[in-house]
Image 1 (cartoon, rainbow, N blue to C red):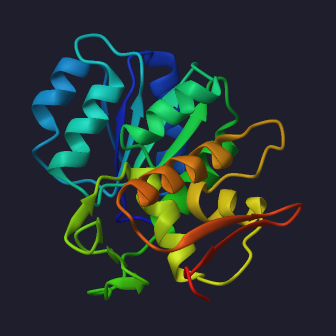
Image 2: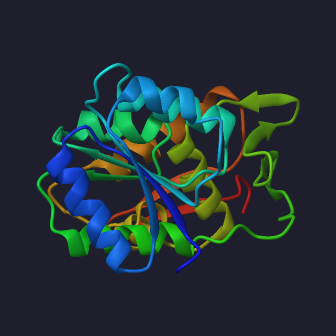
Length: 228
């Protein structure tokens, strides 16, 4: 991991010091910015393998930074840090473009595990579009389309639909979705996966896309062609 570069944007200097020291001890190169305004001016510059961004920042908040970064660098790996821990907060952060979401306080070993998980996600070389019925998903452009109709998807909606399409006609447990799409252990006390499944169902229906996302009670979800 010696060549992996991390940009940490965190205004709490003690927290930033704790994270940056731990990452450096594990072989990562780390740059630190404490101000959201300064971060906004620098995001379009040098590229990093991973961005760790706190939500509550002076100048420009972290969610705004993430949205801007996702537009400039669609393939960026982004971990959001925040003390905001409701399901709605997590949905907002993930919809805003974060790949993963870690609430404060946290153990460093958990942050390190999430960093390793995000950095393991190597992009496929020129991955081919996926098609199920009239639905097409382009991993390179990160676009979804039903016929001539574009389907607007948030970052996490796209990741979830991509995973379902890669596993068409397979029942996928919630635990597996949490691990593969969100890189977290499934918490049975939360319903964020159900929330995103419902988002996808609504958007596919509005676009008149054919595949069905079905709930298999007690087992998980399955994406099926309409006439299968």
